[in-house]
Length: 321
Ligand code: BMA
Image (tube, rainbow, N blue to C red):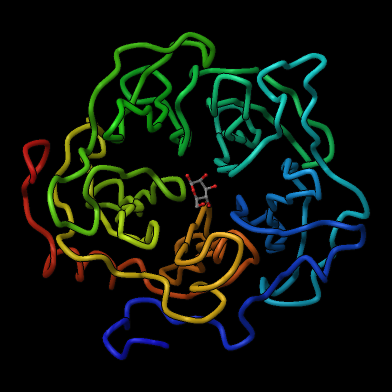
């Protein structure tokens, strides 16, 4: 049931906007899409599609209005290729898309699922038809990663989430060439104790660049007696030193409420991997996986997110919790 206090984002009345039944070929579920707005205004979703082996691939869906009349590729757009990329043995998951003006290409950072667990892989594309893979850029166990759209002090920057069991925090790493990564910095820690974001957090979609800083939607995973609950919070990071956290929300702003978020293959999960914002605009459309089963849409405003963070945020950083 929806909570009358969740007002920052409004769910679309047609949610879930895409399900396995919309697919032109047999699939089990569709969720966690990477998103970009093409220059002609088309919304492109790079959907994570799970087949009936339990392995995932990516399939492109395009829509002129971002809501309906989706043109879905008639077959998988990017399949795991374990013969050439052994890290993709058990599929590819959760793409995050960043347009990189310097390269005039789209970077796709995704989870590649190998025998030793999930790691972070990178590919580039111009057209979402052909893809150039760079392979693994972060070894297992690591996921929830996205590339920043431009260099910071001459270096490329990647946000990611390695696991240091039993806790998992957000890190940022730097690279001169997109292949060799180092200068690893802790960016945001999971709180401890009874917080909604205790023990395990991760980046959700790529950061939103605002004049006030990088606005980050992150997920917090609450462990309960009946499983995990994935909810979303906000944090703001310095534009020139993105590992520097300026503000962090104490409360979540979006959480599973509707039936399609509460029930599914993995219930109680809202998991956005992308959004669209019109150039120079304020309206943000967040596309998210609902219960690892379908794709839903919720709309908000970047300026209202920043105001909300001012009211609900604190300056606690790495020492929180
Ligand atoms: C995370 C990721 C997501 C998934 C979520 C809930 O760890 O693997 O792909 O949506 O768990 O199952």
